[in-house]
Image 1 (tube, rainbow, N blue to C red):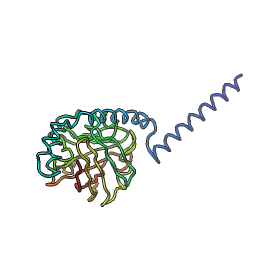
Image 2: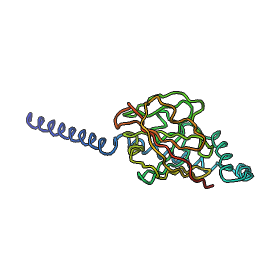
Image 3: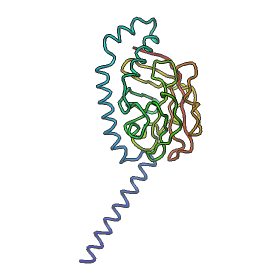
Length: 241
């Protein structure tokens, strides 16, 4: 009886060890599996909130008002300004597509802990950065955050690299010339990657306005560390209403 109990315990320990090892391997070569399951559910919730947002925005009156402007970019700015007043932290606000790394995901408003568990987050007021293991590293408050697509300024989006779906795990594989798409409820925006930079966590100059519309993607670097930030810069190429 004792031998049988020892054998059962041994098998249980071996099985547990295999599970732990598998989890470590998956995390190293892909992304952390348990948080990814949770994040998949949260990403679904973000997509649901985006669908609801698209149902109500923009309304016909706003579309008519935007249509009075001359040129697509001027029309998009009217819509983006109104959109800024409409969205809530944690809500899905658009889709981010980066074909070169096979990414197609809903972006949420905000970079607080709960928001980044749903997907990449748009820098709202109080800029923060995702750290390793799902932690958040505060950089510095920057007014009311960064702009929305169509406002002609810098739009910044942060994402995890190893946890919660790890949407920006391959951010370092994005190359100059690659296209990045932001599909918002009011317009579609195409950006072309210009360059990348590796900066200190407190370097807020990367999200400053530069005189043209620019998309900035940022994540911790290297993998499993928060010692630096990997940043991709892309310039607006096209707007479609």
